[in-house]
Image 1 (cartoon, rainbow, N blue to C red):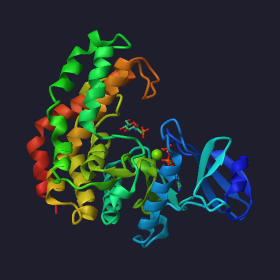
Image 2: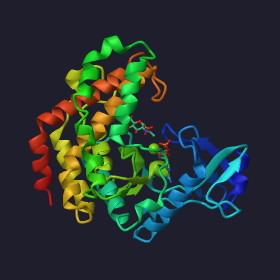
Image 3: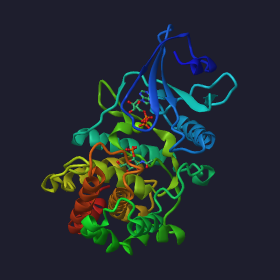
Amino acid sequence: MHPVLSRFALSGAPVSSEPYGSGHINGTQLVVCDSGRRYILQQINTNVFREPEKLMRNIELVTAHLRTKVTDPRGVLCLVPAFDGKSFAVENGEYWRIYELVEGSVCYQSADAALFYESAVAFGRFQNQLSDFPADALVETILQFHDTPARYLTFHRSVSQNVAKRKGQVSREIDFVLERESFSHTLMDLQAAGELPLRVTHNDTKINNVLFDEKTNKALCVIDLDTVMPGLSVNDFGDAIRFGASTATEDERDLSNVHFDLELYKTYVKGYLSTCGQSLTKMEKAMLPTGAKMMTLECGMRFLADHLAGDVYFHVSREGQNLDRARTQFRLVEEMEKSWGQMHIVVEQTH
Ligand code: ADP
Ligand code: GN1
Ligand code: MG
């Protein structure tokens, strides 16, 4: 049993602690106590999150706010305090926290249309419940995370530095990114002009960051709050579409399998607007398709930049995986561009 467990106010004595779930960022353990109570112990990845104390402050503020809004207590993560009153404990320089396990819940790695709809309901509800929270009270846990023009600057650097000497093989992909540079300013410009509001955003709106009721498959709770920070609602929407409205996995090699699925997009729009439609502004709704294309382009560009840099950020399990990932994203962007009119009509016709 990890010694850090003795620092937290658990109900009962821990009897087991085992690796749990399949998250890629934090080390997660399931802890069982002799009282029968179960907990989630997590070591915060301080390579990714440089200021864990500020990150935990964000989570404390956001979960406290959500708790005032939920009817089912399983609808919000619950931090277990350490004996010193803090929401985390430091042991040998490592940062740890504990959540109560959400009982009767299940987490999925992939989704059919019904689960995808439910995840949209959950992320929409999350946005709605935090719409009256002052987003600027939160810190940016990763700086300029979705500042797409700033991502372009990094991209230009990766191309000119050409560290992994791969530039010659990817000139078509580089051109694809460069042709869309003026588009990359759209959302940041609207935000700067005060036309898009700063919101509390989740920044990792994938299906495996929602817990579902194991009996009804209804969405219960949004988890993985490390990247909760100020941002644009349309980017949270967009990241969910990028990942969930594709017919293939992110690193599919055969591009003929990769399509932007307009029906899945429609499903997500319906679920999302059913819970946050009334708190989004007209401009935010109008910019949902732009959020989808922006997040897909940005992610593709990040994968390509990492391929050029020698795979230093995104883990790879085979040569060329980041290039394959970039190509799937660019295929999705192309198909979104072809469906651009329909993507807007779907939003306009969803109430
Ligand atoms: P990562 O950042 O590594 O993805 P997560 O916070 O998403 O970490 O947690 C990893 C996994 O642990 C989740 O996918 C989920 O299966 C499980 N999990 C996390 N928190 C809870 C909780 N409070 N109750 C039940 N399961 C949880
Ligand atoms: C990273 O760790 P994971 O897979 O949840 C990345 C996201 C990307 C995603 C692409 C902190 O998320 O921004 O969209 O990979 N997270 C961070 O697979 O950079
Ligand atoms: Mg996760």
